[in-house]
View (tube, rainbow, N blue to C red):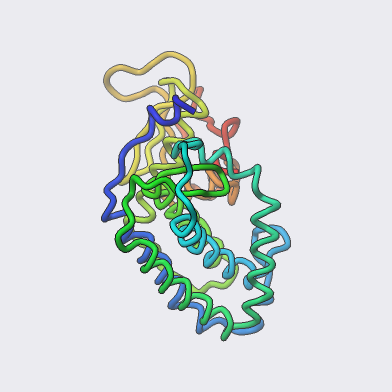
Length: 267
């Protein structure tokens, strides 16, 4: 845990808050256009239908509301870059809460109401709440500012899931995508420490990773380059290394330029 905290970069509070709100509003704007047939359709998330996925995105935001509303924990238990690896431990609880919320929402009208209520509660929760305030999360005590950074990852990833399932074309907020890309790149660098491979995700992130000879000048001998959404999909097991290579969405140059042994980094 101390290593994760030491390596975590800082994020602009105002930009992060604006990105969280903007990405949630992008999804919220798409909900009324969903049809019952779409809601019942499958997603790439196991047994979840589009209805469960849509409810889960609201749950992502309501977790902020619950955290702020609860008593402040005595200690910080989790750092920002501890979070990606910690998520897998709570998959069953997340699934249960998501299914309950989806059942309660009951159709498009119910989801529209859920999103409106969540947006209002989120505004109330964030107004006057400091980023330094510790809040209770599933993962332990965490500063609100760090938790909001994790919400950009959840929102970006699940917006992509929603688009893949429905073809709605919900836009990605640029700042949310940038933050998501950086968090997942830094999580890889923590999971595979070293300097023998350079991961480039223009225009948002460059990190060095993987144990081995460290590059010091000139063009690195081992370079992996891809776009932000492809990197997000790789880092969260939405696509595989061979698939990304076959579809020319990934450029890997050098004997060590294969990051698949360290993927995914989330969950």
